[in-house]
Length: 147
Image (cartoon, rainbow, N blue to C red):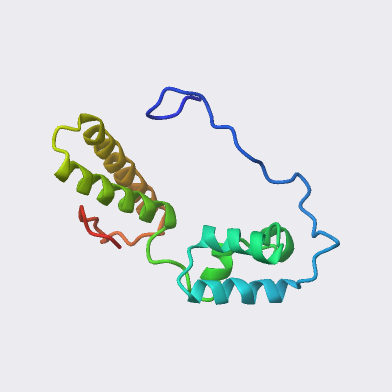
């Protein structure tokens, strides 16, 4: 399938290992890993950043293969999940950056198109998250406001 806005095919990138077993060299127990995730979440770290920190600093390749839970699942159990989903939050931040840029550079038509595309992605994600129950139905998005 083609991508939505670029008319290109899929993206290449690194893939997770096929084996979903706990590595033999890992010294952490599932309980210790959950405590690390909770500690990092309390400092305000995003779920994807938690995974990167655990991989790079602690040598934990995959939280899910060891604990049988995703990072967001652990955060949901401990009521530490973010107010709005991380992908939506990053799109909102991107839109605010583009808005600042277009205020300074009024003739930049490419950034105006990027603003329209980003705004439509935000609206589509909000509709999806409301349908799935991640966001409450009365939640509204105000342009330019950072959450």
